[in-house]
Length: 105
Image (cartoon, rainbow, N blue to C red; front, top):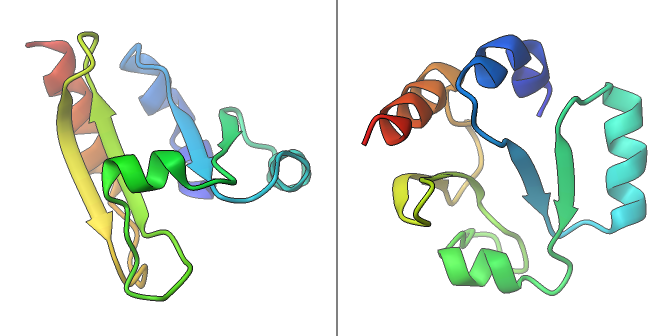
């Protein structure tokens, strides 16, 4: 999330709504966002419904994969990057490019 914060101007320039979702609690998100000065909204998926729906499955039992989804204005997933091990995060340049391409369809 900190890399998104650090590249926020680039993300904002796409015109997309950028949100973060995790299975952490709302209270945890508030503390995390404040501590890291995040400019984006964080949503709680405590019951894992969103993670399961989008197939964000980790190889680590009980965990959700580090993932990025770009969804166009019609609700179509145009980009999907799911990292089941979470050792590496998706690259901001790739995500920004995917957002721009989805907006041009």
